Length: 532
Image (tube, rainbow, N blue to C red; front, top):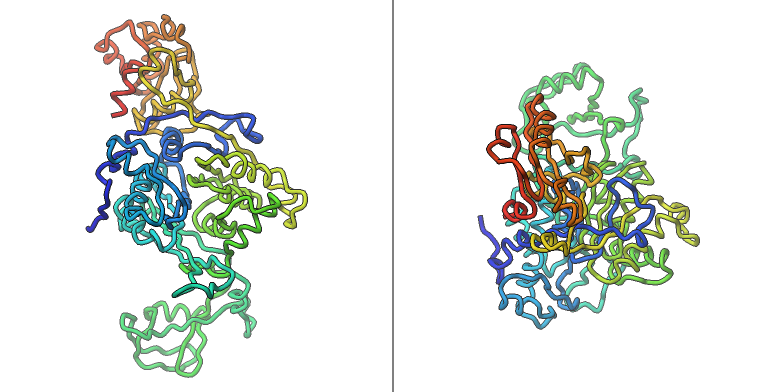
């Protein structure tokens, strides 16, 4: 299969794997009604580092990713700032990208590659990713996605009408569309939900013969092309139709006739499709009359009294995506959060259908608090002068505002310079040792021996003897000794379970531990080995 080659690809190919894990640090002052369990998240920080920070808690759990990355028009003034290993490449990449940069497409691809790799890891097996893009990079993006997600997982490319009017000053064409490219992590596991049927479509269903089954529309059952079933047919009314191609087989035709679902008009036969049998409307790849950028700015003005953000996405666009992809308990991630439209749309849909969808927003710019989070605060609490009643009342909800902490680092743990909190370290160890992602609320120490997670899939119990305190880590309390090992053995052996114990040291040999069904992992050195 053809693959996309670009300058820097070999340098960034595995760059996402070298990013150190950083714990999320909640900021209570900037959070709103934070929940004790896993909450909505707004993260202020570089999105590549933030995506890596999310892996221990959310790998394989995100149902829908929506991102609106830079379109690379040459007028955005962005620079690739990831710390790649090659000094020469770093110097090349860190230059600001503008319209005069003949290698701006290569730099954009270098920026997108590691982020898409991490987003793929975060997606659930039945998850999908929507990416907003325009003509500048759409063709490159498609090839990039084919490389990372596989061409077989391409679902659709939606074209949506983004402008109210026509640009008559354009040299060639007035460009009034953008794209949303949709890929699945595993297309065979993915379902696209149908949209509610609009009123104009419902009007096509009528009931001229007062059928007790209600309104219906007529669909032809003859085939205009090759590939149908060929047979003569006699209706129960006695009307005869010579052999021809039909869309259904002979048995189905007789069943439809017996069920009074056939309508004969001249030499044509139609079948009734009842409104109560139609499960919504299948999405199309052309979205018109939905909303546009001007509407999106009006939505921002209704919240901030001015155009606080230059290029917001309209609520209706994100709402459409959520309706065809998500269920009430799904997680939605937007790692180019901008004005916070994704969170607004999630909260609005939850308010409408009583759902419990969770959002995760990541924004690296300084306006993460003043615009992104502030918009979410206002739509949760209510905007007093808003015309929309739901917005005026407030959508309800909560979020935890986070920044990125220091990387979990072996040397800094040894010196005590950076000791992560217990849930953050527990989540990290579980992820790198077993590829398991669970919420921090499930990773508190459960007993005196340090049990913090039981994985029924592999029948393994995980223990962590740890406190973010050097004095504790140097004490006997943090060591695995024979008495503790026996208790762990006795707690797991009756059920045939194994145990993995993370601690700063031990007073018992691994051979003896192996006989007990226990694997010892010494902190912090084991983190380096497992993370390779």
